[in-house]
Image (cartoon, rainbow, N blue to C red; front, side, top):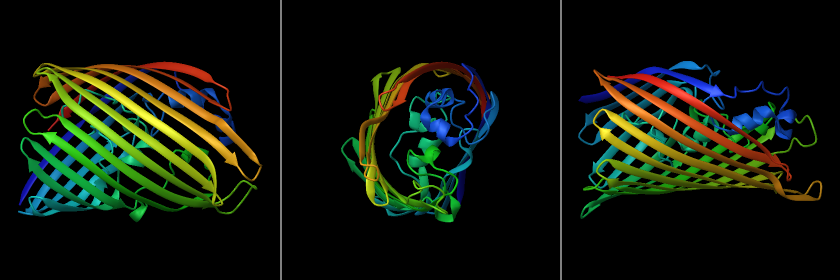
Length: 378
């Protein structure tokens, strides 16, 4: 029996301008548009957290792998921070009866994003990809209780891995609040009934250069109802989301690494079995990482996220093509320095801007965040 474990922890301090406005008094105020909603869309470190935001906050990462037999391993990844709270991202058994075939059961990663929460050399405090720095988005495409089957094949200088899986996020109360992109619009009397996901992914790795290409797809099927019904619009809801992912990571120079990712979402909301809201969402990120020397990393990042929703309300005989639109842009620069003896620091600047609005209206806003991380790895 062999155990490999890594612990990381530290303190993050952020200075953000402008400060987050006070939240509106009701959900209706939020949906109609407010300064609070505008700031929320900037996806800065104070925008969307599981715990109450504090400008200086601790964080912890723990990774462990336990070899139980030549073919059976147990894996655990746990985090605690204000973004996700205390959260288990991986807790599964991995059984590989042959070098080419394996099975995973437990809390598993979907492999439809490229978040580097547990990378020990990540240059970022908050990553460029909005799906890695927003609580509501990470709940959609990060991890869940489920079963996966994977294959490994080596062809010349390339390793090809494929993964398919099925998931039940609500199992054992792991994730009970997710409901696509519409969580903030649901009232407290909405009761979620089921959440089912399936996914498939392909990862191609060049064993000589380290270049990677990842393709992934996932379908989320969710349903719920208002119990009790308090207003006429309290109708049963059914939400289907198709997510497609592309990731590319390549060395463009011995000291420079380029990363690109693209996520596309198609979301369909049904009210009492009638198609009502159609969302099309897209997220892109681009990063250039410079390995100046063994103790210093520099990183430049860019990201954009767009959302467009159309409403077809058969109950009111109304169709609105431009019901809602959102466009977010972010630019980032960071510097990571290794001080030795397990200590490191990260200095990061982020500028974000957004434009959003309902039925043709548009409201812009922007903000900046400067952060300093002091971390320790053991």
